[in-house]
Each structure stands twice: as C-alpha cells, then as structure tokens.
Length: 432
Image 1 (cartoon, rainbow, N blue to C red):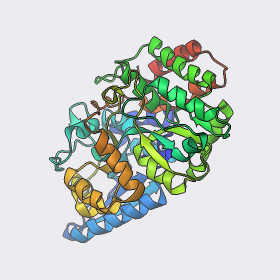
Image 2: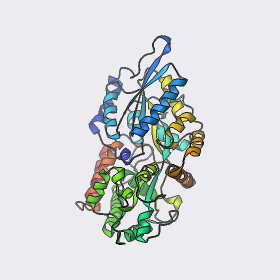
Image 3: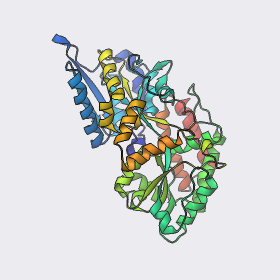
Image 4: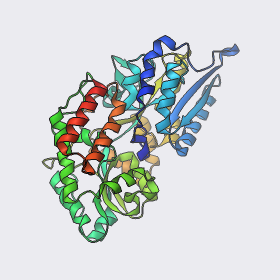
C-alpha cells in the first residue's frame, strides 16, 4: 500500500486481469531482466507506482545501488496505482513481469499463491519486526519484504474545531458516542463545515470496526471471519451517523472522494475529521488551510488499547518467481530496505522505515508534519494489536464492493440490512 496519497488506497478492481495470473506457471518463460553478459553484467527491471516525488526518491536509491554494484543496472517502470495492477497482471501472465515488483498487501497473497513471486530467503530481516514481516508471508514463504509501515488514523482539521467552538476530544479515551457528538456539534455550529467524512477507504473502516468487536474480514487461512450480520451492524453504525448529521450529503462525500488533496474538504477547511492513514498526513498538511492533527480511532468503551488499530505494512518489495537473477534481485531488495542511504532518500514516502536502525536515522532528519506522523506511530506502539491477516485471493475486489454498498446506503437507495446482506454475498463470492 503506497499510502502517500489517498488514491493509493482506492483500489481499482481488475477482476479479469487478475484472473489471468492463473496462467503464470504455464505461460511464463523467463524473467524480465537481461541475461548476464560478458563480465557478469546484469540488468533488472523494477516496477513501482507512486507520485513524481516517489519516482525521484526511487531513482536516487537506484543510483546509489548501481554505484555500489557496477555490474547491476536497474531499469525503472512506474505509473499510477490504478493502472499498475492491470499492467502487472498482463505482464505476469505473459512471463514478462519486472524482476523486482512493488507489491501491495491487498494483492500479495493473490500473486504469491499463484506462483508469481519468489520466496525471499537472502534478505537480512533481523532489524524488521515480525509483526511487519508476517504481513509479507503466505503459504509458508516470505514473498514480500516491507519497506515501511503506517496506521489507520483520524485526521482532524483543528482550525475547523476552533471556528466551531468545539473542543477536540482526548483521543486516548474517546468513544464512538464522543465522535458522533463532536462531529455533529461542528456540523451544527453555523460555520458551514461538515462534521466528518465517511470512510474514504471502506475496507479499512470496516476492518477497524470488526476488530473492535472481536471479528475480522478474514482469518489467517484466508477464509471469511465475519458474518452477514456483522456487515449489517457496521452499515447500521454508518447509517446512524449519517442520519444524525455527522456526515454531509452523499453527493458531497462522493465529490470529495474524487477531489485531489488540494481541493479536498479536509485541506480547504470544509470538514472537521476524515478517516485516513498516518502517512497521508504530511501530504494533507502541505495543502491545508488551517492546522491539522492525527488522532487515534474512537473505540466502543473509550480504551485506546481496544480501538483495533495496528501497524500496517505500507507496501512491499517482491521478486518475480520467473526472474533469471534471483540473487541480484535479493541484493537490491536488501539494499532498498536495509541501507541507511536508501532510507534517507525515501524518508517516509513508503511508510516509516521497517528496518529499526534505518528508522532511527530517518527520524533524526524529519521535521514538521513528517515528524508528527512518525511520532504518532511511536505513540500508539504500546497500544496496537496484532496485524490483520494477509488478505486472501480476490481481496482486491473488496474495496470496490464496500465503496459501492457504502454509497448505496448513504444515498438511501438501500437499507443497512439490504446493503449488508448484498455486500456480504459479493464479498463471499470474491474470496470464497
């Protein structure tokens, strides 16, 4: 997940494209890099998604790696998140995937269990916590090395709260009732700002809600861990917030989903709170009219230890199972995640570094909103619970399913019961 912008978590579902991955073992005929020539020279392809800044950071890392490894050339391939997965599925099915692949949690198991990714055994992981490493594991292998981590979070525009004369809640003790109260006070203050947006990332919103109630979307084996009743209960929760005035009209929510960060209501001072991710925070701050602050999620009983939050691997580096150069692929991944040079080039763009020693070096260089986001992750560390299980095959469809039914609910075209039951049927079909 890169999570440096909101669009990185608007997963564009490409069912037909993903299904083509089933043909990997039969159609793949070799890795994308050039075979070693005279003198052992190797060329590897590296694919990633992200912003112009991420590309600049990545090219800096590549240059540093190539200087230390003059026999290895890295060719970059990059694009936007939504088109990335179509391209990767097509390349993989045709045996032409890049040697090194930036991978998202939602798709890791999909590709690993279809034989598209190599089991990474030669990358040093001693300085990477097991809670992060296990998010890159599937079927007994380590198919992704986390580059960094982030967390779900609420982002508050404190200037909106100040204008409305509403005190920002204590996020270590607030409940969902407190959340409803303060957001509805903001919405009713006459300031013309909305209280809160509905979850931009509906799967993340659902995941936290389920974790707070002793459930989850899926279990470790990839089977559904929730029932239709659980989903109905979640939609009843959202519906009640909408009916009571926490959320603006559904049309406003959908318009804000499509807006760039610069035009988003949280940045322009048109809403008090949004559901977000900790590493979205610096991007929003950069464009914000007003002061912002990261908050923990509310919980049912007002205990931060029970708010369902966790340190989520923001994204991974994986190697193609069909690469002709597995050793060199792992050399590059090792440099990328374990080198201080790489960490200082990336800073927090791919999450707060997963390697603890690199993280310390990066923390010394951070200031402003990036330092605030990093400090937030440090502050919640004693409270976070075990990570959510690695999503099963078909999980890439869940974001689209949950968004569609959340929208149907908020436009009042479906009741909570109808939305929950119909969404559950589609989710069951997607990951069953």
